[in-house]
Image (cartoon, rainbow, N blue to C red; front, side, top):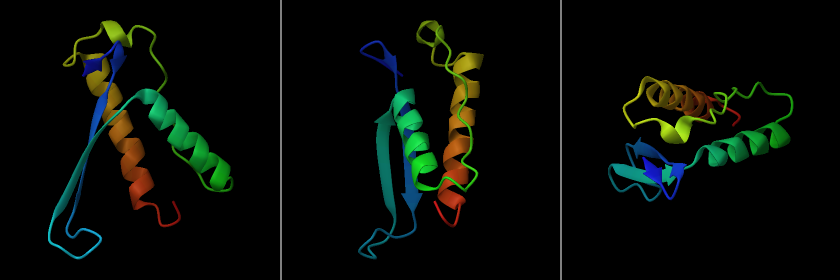
Length: 92
């Protein structure tokens, strides 16, 4: 989604229980690519001896792509892969 000239990515997280043990829980947030860069930077800083997955390269033309374009779809898949590795890693 483009919002105020920046592409926003919807992150949806689902748990079987929330932190209080109350059934299923879903969280939905919007994030820019720069938020992923910040997260990766913090993880590298905090865990310098762990393999932190790489992010897809920045594309200066991304703002011109439609939401269903091949480029945007590929980037979303790579970002999903990045997040999947992080949340399944026992130390991160």
